[in-house]
Image (cartoon, rainbow, N blue to C red; front, side, top):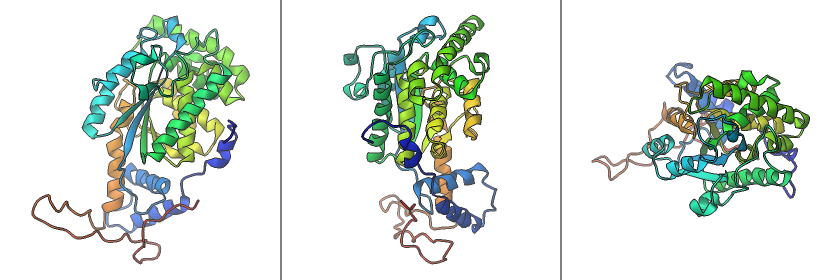
Length: 383
C-alpha cells in the first residue's frame, strides 16, 4: 500500500483455504479414532490446516509471543490499580524474565518480543529493539481529549503492520498476542462499547489487578465520557482509534490485519487484544478467520467482543494477569491438535539417530485421502 487506505484490507485478506480444510476433514474421517472423540482438537487441527494450506497439518515450529506496550492518559483518572505511567515496570519485568508470561514462555521455549509504541519513559531506558517502533510517550486522556493525533494514529497503525511483516518474514508460524499497558482496559472497554452499542457498565471490568467498587465507578464514568467522544467517529476506524484507543490498541489493530494479509495465525489474549480484533473486524470482515481466542479473561468487555467475533475461548482458567499469559497457556493445546492431526494413523516422525540405539529411516510421504496415492508434498493454498 502506497498510502494508508483501510478499505484495501477487504481485498487483501482472504479466508483460510476451504478446499484444504475439507481435505483435512476427509483425512480425519478415515482414521480409526472416531470423529468427535478428540473434541475441539479436531476443529483446531482443521483450522490450522486451512491456515497453513497443508494436509497433513505441519507442526507449529516457530511460535512467538508478541506484546505491544503503552501507557494511557486515562490512568490519571484513577481507574486502575496501577499508578499512571508505570507500563515501563511491566516491560522491564518481562525483559528480565520475572513476569508470568516470561516464566511460561521460558518453560514452553517460546521467544517473547516486546514492542514499545507509547510507554511513558525515556526511550534510552529500554533496549533499542524494544523502542524501535515507538510513536509517542503515553497516550492522551480519552475522556477529555484524543488519545492520538491523526498523524500519530497512522504511525501507530503502520508500526503494527511493520511488526507483522517482520514476524512473517522471520518465519513465525503462530503469534500469541498480548499487551503491557496501564489504563488499557479502560480504552478497550470504550472501543467495545462503541462498536457493540452498549452502555459503559456492561463492558467495564475490574482489570488485571482487581480494583475496588469506587475505582470501578470512576472507570465506568471514564468509559461513559469517552463514549461521547467516540460516537461521532464510529464510521472511521482509524479516527476512532485515535480518539479513544491509544497507540498500543492502534498498533494491535494494524498488526492483526497485516497478520491476516500475511496468513499468519494469531492467538488473542484478553480484553485489549479483543478490542483491537473488533476494530479490525470492522475494517475487514474476513480477518477474524485467522485468529483464535486463547482464554476467557473474565472481563465483561472481552466476553462481549468474543460474542461479536462469533468464536469461543479455548481455555477458561480465570487468568486475569494479562500480558499474553492466558493465551500462552493455550499454545500446548493448539500444538497438540497439530501433532495429533499430523501423526494419527500415519508414520510417526523419525527418532533422532543419535538419541538411543534405534536408527530410523526417512518418514513416509503424506497421503492425500482424496486420491489415495502418495502425495508429492503438502497441499498448498492457491494464491
